[in-house]
Amino acid sequence: MCKKYKQMKSILAAIIIVFVLIGCDSNKTDPAQDKTIDSNLSPLEVVNKRMQFYNQHNIVEFLKLYAEDVKIYTFPDKLLGTGTANLASIFKPKFANKSIQVEIISQMNNGNHVINHEIVKEDGIDTKYISIYEVENGLIQSVKFVRDK
Image 1: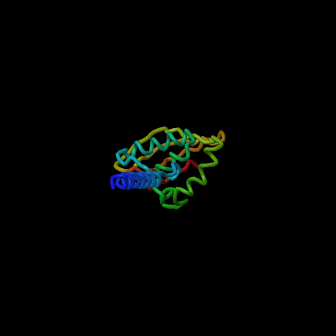
Image 2: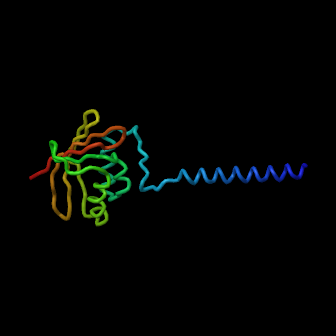
Image 3: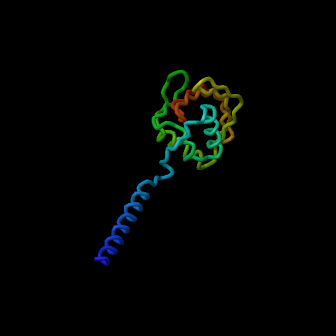
């Protein structure tokens, strides 16, 4: 009886280990799909991280700062696009070619809005923007661009 008890104890221990390993493996996520956010960041900190990842051409971290259904407008309300997949299609090639940089000329914030005066440099061409970012719960919900003509 003692021998059977030891065998059952060993089998039970093996089953527990398998369940633990399976549980740990199912918690793994693809880092490109990981939307872990730090909702403790202020809207200004979120937008500045966005600028940092933009200039580092880090598409994965850049996209993590946006809500999945982010809306991009030309000021005041002309919708240009929606969603991080749309942003990825625009910025992934530019980041891969390292053909784009942004410089913040001035910045101010009020509540969950951050307003930047920016110069985007792409392939030697400078374009001035006023960009209005709306940030909630650590993610950029919308951006409105006023472009230099």
